[in-house]
Length: 280
Image (cartoon, rainbow, N blue to C red; front, side, top):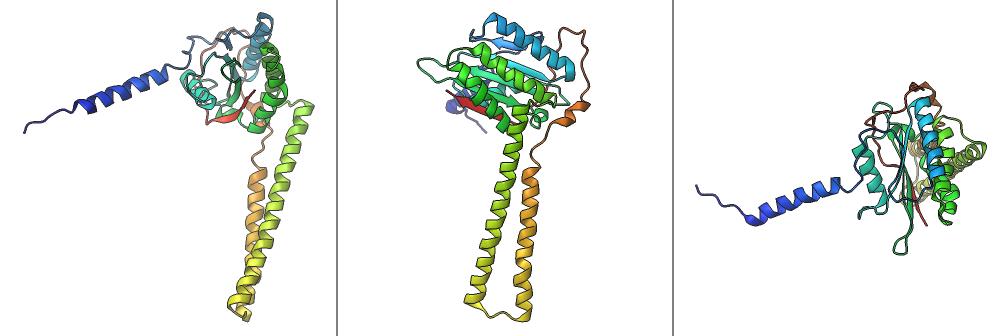
């Protein structure tokens, strides 16, 4: 049997391969050795702050193997910032492979043609110490005010000064208060939702009873038991909601790196996309 090749199919396959290769090359290539943890590709961080930030992040790594990488870029290469961060995280393997305790901060400076963007992107093992709300607070309260006056070095320094104690389980007082208030707010919202649900459920049960049947003794048992089941489900929902906030204290069991080491390799950590993004 004679077979024919469709040139359009071959062209599409070649185009798909080309797109895949191009996409993987869009993010900056991973350095062979992680001797530095700040990569200022956009050249916006002054040398004094650059040195201080690098030293702080290296000390954090030696303390508990937390690998925080800061990167500035002139362009996100057509990707949204979350996709860009996830690609960098995957290609570089930020954080320890077993602990997944990497953190990536990507900054795309503001230009006349485009807005400025920043994202704090967390590995699986860093999400407890750096929940999304805390990442957002660091960006909006500490980084963006400095970005607006073009002081990128100060912005990163402020972020690192909050991320470092958080990853050690030692939240500053203002951050601890913020997280406590947010936790209480979430729990209050969950309680309110359960109460509203129970009230609506009781009303619905009453309407069904009134419209369709007169309750027998057996029906009364069913009607009275149903709200109890709903309340029990709501209680489980509330516990689930409050359980998402972790103090990050479990990180005290991390093994520390050697204080005499001046370099290390990328650990192969991964991320599920946790963190937050902001723009100005």
